[in-house]
Picture 1 (cartoon, rainbow, N blue to C red):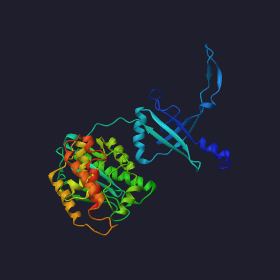
Picture 2 (picture 1 turned 90 degrees about the horizontal axis):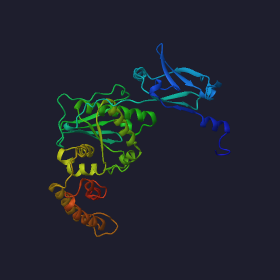
Picture 3 (picture 1 turned 45 degrees about the horizontal axis):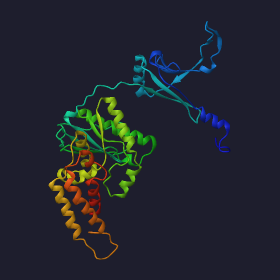
Picture 4 (picture 1 turned 180 degrees about the vertical axis):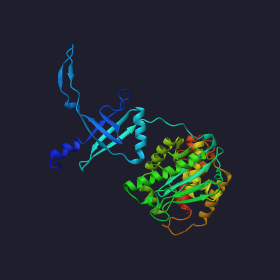
Length: 379
């Protein structure tokens, strides 16, 4: 307690502003913080156990207590959750309740049910739907079990969310017939608080519904702060640094669990770099689509080999930089000392990359780490 910073009464209120009780299946859900349904309304009954009094003892000398009094009040639930909560109450499953008193002296309730996982409706043998999350949306890649992009089914469309109608272009879809699409929500990159959380939920629903329609599980990058970003745009990098990618991945994972859609998280290192060198030019797609393709291929179990075409690209970059030699010091362009050292490391790593284990091929200091710096230095 910081003397002089807060009054004792304020400290006591902050210390005693919440009540928590875990559920018990043998006692009908939660005996201490009990939710009931009567005459079309939900109520919450709080058992005040410390007000129970002793009324005697049993044969063994143990105290016999009176029934603890209860305080009952109305409980308001959002319309979209009422039917689900009622079904869970009738089934008798245990639930956890956390009663929180806010600064406005109003009480709010957090209810947690133990829900069994539904039957999976997706099959990994058909491939994966690769998802690359970004500050303004998500890139999707429809990938077959062979690791190649698959065209969208005939008549396939992305439904427009009913709740997004504030302005034109609030929800944009750019679809490529060869199995790639980008879902863009411009407001996602600058909105704050509850609005951003809501937009993330809308985007997660669209992604999960797409995977459910295709019958394919979702491939995502794991929750890691070392996410590979291959972009030199300062504005984009600033948005990426401030965007909660963890919240996006968690929203997709939760929604997929409820809908019976499988989710597989993969190591996030070098997905954009691999997509830039191997797939962006081949399929005529953006760097984000290429990263989504790499994510799906990694979920299937493919290794990313150094091909003859990639070696030719590296050689072309080397020749291009050799022509930019500038005798003036301090420019930092062309075949500088740092770039020469980079090519020297690449010569050693490229020759042995295909023979390495998958773990070493995807490690942070693999050949892809140097190829990323090479691409950035040649721009």
